[in-house]
Amino acid sequence: MKNLKVSKKLIISYAFVLILLVVIIAVSIGNLISIRARVEAFYNGPFKVLNAANTVNSSFEAMQKSVFRAISNTDPVIAERALEDSKVYAGKIQEQIPIIQKDFLGDQAIVERLRAALDELAPQREHVLELALQNQKEEAAAYMEANNVKTIHKAQAELDELIDTADRKADELIVSLRSEQMEFIVMLSVLGTASVLISILFGIYITRSITRPIKELETAARQMEQGHLKVDVTYRSKDELGSLSNSMRQMSEKISYYMDEISRAMQQLADGNLDIPGCDGFQGDFLPVQEALFIVIDSLNETMAEINTFSDQVASGSDQVAGGAQVLSQGVIAQAGSVEELASTMSEISRQVNENAETSQAVKTAAGEMGTNILACNQQMQEMKAAMGEINSCSTQIRKIIKTINDIASQTNILALNAAVEAARVGAESKGFSVVAQEVRNLAGKSSAASKSTEALIEQTLDAVAHGTKLAEETAASLMNIVGGTDDMVSKINQIAEATQKQAEATEMVSIGIGQISDIVQTNSATAEESAAASEELYGESQLLKSKISRFKLHM
Image (cartoon, rainbow, N blue to C red; front, top):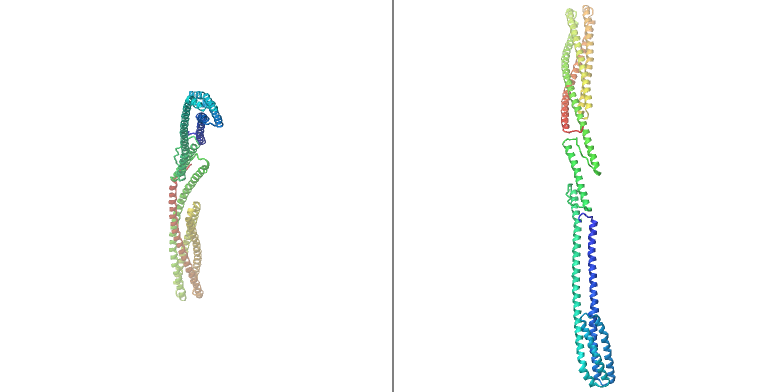
């Protein structure tokens, strides 16, 4: 019955209860019919017999009294009436005898004896009544005493026995009815109790067969509500609740499978494994979860692959940038050395120019004495010419140094441009390095501008030296005529002094430009060192990033 449907269980239980009710009703009807039959038997048997016997008994007594009244009363009217009454009572007795004979349940011989006694008494009574009508009272009384009294006693004895027998039969029927009533009550009680107990048992069984699995399913549902997906549903049956239990078990198993697959995938993702097989068998509303999981895994694979590629590019670029920074640093160091040499040369030129200025002042002072010291002046002019040659030679060397500075600035600019290109290719992570490359380019531009300014000053110095040399040659050529042209010589010496002063000023400007170049070179050197350090740090970070990414196993 466990595997029956709940509806069939209810139908069977209700049908069984209805059958018990029908049985009880049938038994009740049967017992009522039986009791009715017994009551009818009692009514038609002992009751009617007793009623008839009592009627016979009372009529028999009344008849005897009428006979005695007819004998004892002298009034003929009363005697006639008593005679009529006795006949009436005798008729009633005769009417009841067939009823007694028909329905008497005792010995019919008693009825026969009673009938015989009454038949025997009838002519005796008639004879007594005739004597009484003839006013032969004493003869009637004597006849009655001699004959009727014996028959009356005999009939009364039979009638009493008949009444006693009828009473016994009535009592027996009543006892039987009471016994049957008790049996009926006991049977109804037993059947009612049995039906109630069976109904209770069926109710308990049906209730438990429904409530137990429902409680188990409710407990399982609460456990799943609290996050315990692996629930144990033990109820098994082929009814609706068994089907529901099977569905609950399958749902628990599937959801547990889904969560295990998701947990396994998440754990492998946490362990760095992006090549995750499986995650199949998702159904219904869990299909979007499976698709989202695959999308996340594929996205992580693509992202990690791109990061791995980018880290390789960053490592390569940072390595190249670091090499370029090293070359730039070496170039800047060489440039600094050249600038130092240029500064030293310019210091010497400045010293010589200052000496020339002092000499020019001395020549100017000694112009008045030129006539007397012409030979000494000629010698000094030769020395000045030689000094001018040295100045020209130094100017040529300075021009070469300026060219070297321009080459260094151009190379620095190219290196800075390459560094900027590499930084742009690396991406957002090299923003600081790009700024450093731009600063290097700016410093290279400033170095180029300063070298060009210095070159212009040197050109002016060379022009001034050439002009001074020319003046010195002219002065040397005119020394022999100096006596005749002292005024002209003084004028030329003044021009030489002014030119020398301009040369000193130009030399001072060149010294200032070289100082600026030196500062720029020092800045370039520091920037190159910082760029090299940043490149090394960037390379180290890219290697660290690559090592971090290497722990992920990508799906190829």
